[in-house]
Length: 113
Image (cartoon, rainbow, N blue to C red):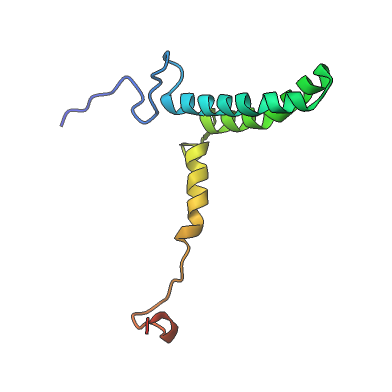
């Protein structure tokens, strides 16, 4: 059987937007920008001084920017997963834990009566 080497990485996501950003990353940037656009003017208007309002607006935008950066651009390199996919797996782990038993005969409390 003949083997051919593929010149591109087939396992990574395709960078379709301008060649350096994927659709998933673009969605995170748009949602993060919309959140900041929605609440920063409200925070800015809470303070009468423009300098204080601008400073507090920047401070309140930093957590959203960090979350967008982590979920969109960072990878869990040991597992070859993006952090958003890794986070979803960790959230769903609690539903995968069940009561495991040994043997074929169920206990009395396991049988529906």
